[in-house]
Image (cartoon, rainbow, N blue to C red; front, side, top):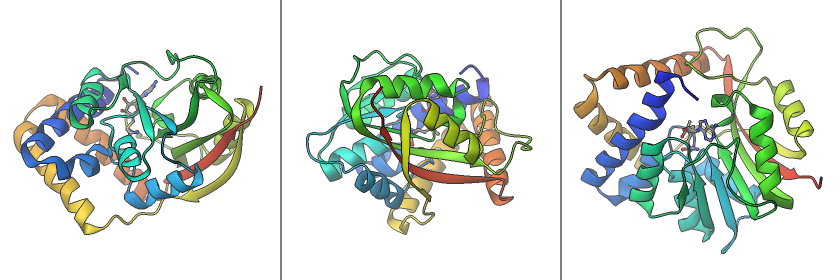
Length: 252
Ligand SMILES: C[S@@+](CC[C@H](N)C(=O)[O-])C[C@H]1O[C@@H](n2cnc3c(N)ncnc32)[C@H](O)[C@@H]1O
């Protein structure tokens, strides 16, 4: 993952988000640290699908600033382990939530075989070029029969142009083949529910405004904003949809 725009979006903005949350207060942390990919309804769907419970080890691959994992820890009592390659994002997750974070790439997970009960990978697949390697690594570290919760941005077809730099959106057909060929059985899928309550979205907006107020003049901010605008346009044109999936790891 080398595109400067991706580093701006996933590293610079991640660090700025944590700074803004520290100024505004802890109640802003989880909504702001769900980096555009989740809402409480989406997280609840994934948590129930994966049957999260107290003590479950939940590996969140591409955890970003850690909002989804922190939400799962607070609501379901899971023991999260975060994996995130971008150093500022990894530091931000650790600063905001005090959760264990491994700074590493999802295509080379530094954990033992069959050591993890459940995994989440939310909004990450489209940012990774070697998707089979990422899913194979997740398969390797999960116990047989374990659940994988995914949030995936799916392309309507292969004719999508002007995508955010570094993003490769799978079609539904490609996603199905990818899961099947890396040892997962897809059990269920739903389109991500849009609505988050105002109490949640207002906190996200306030943190977004605080970040803009301090950083809008920087090149990194402009790059990250352009990524967001491209994504928003593709969604509004109906070229992309956000899907929630529950898969289970088949035995080898
Ligand atoms: C859209 S953000 C989602 C963050 C988080 N999962 C969430 O829902 O809030 C995508 C994340 O995937 C991470 N990522 C990109 N390439 C990755 C890779 N090869 N392995 C693991 N994570 C990766 C990025 O650094 C970024 O934090």
